[in-house]
Length: 357
Image (cartoon, rainbow, N blue to C red; front, side, top):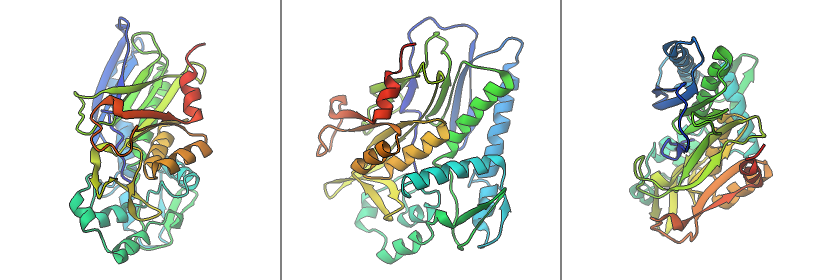
């Protein structure tokens, strides 16, 4: 499932004099960039830490990148039915998270959805031209037959498919998992407790920022045409104090890749259960969860449903979710922050209320 969880939606904010023992590193991974800020331990080489981070990220890419021809996932996608392949621990964890959200979202999150995306020809962009000349019902049905996560079977440290043509794509969860892995490297390898890790807008934070305050993430209003340098903040999520002093966030948004056709808002996201583009989905959804990988998958699932259905699903599954929606759903311009409103699930309200010790 294609998702846009972008760094332009999330930013850091703080207001006090920064501490001098914090440092920042950045790099490229998974077709995007990562940014990390952390309190540098004494007698620890910053270059060594970044080398360890890059090594782990490369391991994840070697396992789950569909852009690497000999990655585990690419090999699996080429295999015939009933042919097993050995998977590593990272692959197994992402598969487990995917399975959990697939089942709880009733198939709205499905890592086998790529045949439908290719049939519609959206990729990362959708157009009015494609909506005017959509695939035929037969073409959609043919692609939908290959959207079948249940046909991917795990047996210990190996997986196989029981249907030819089924393939996996973890792009809607791998960045979030990558954030979790970097945070694990900082904690376990270097005993770092104060950090913020971000890959493509998915964020994990722990402890205090350089301003000696809990990390705070700003959520942008989903105004079409907004950019990294020109954006308006509509809300902020402060790291909870009484919940382990950690936070795991992911944001998925359709607003930069949606069009209005026949009076309706269409997103580039395909609903795996119908084979059609989402109409009336929330322009932006931010999810907090026990891990960034889990938040990433749920943010994708909730943008792959019409808004009312997504809100109901989030409440039913006790998901901490923040939806940014239009005040007037018939508003086709929405170029001011006043045009938007925030809708929170009870779990998100509870998380945002956790500010005092």
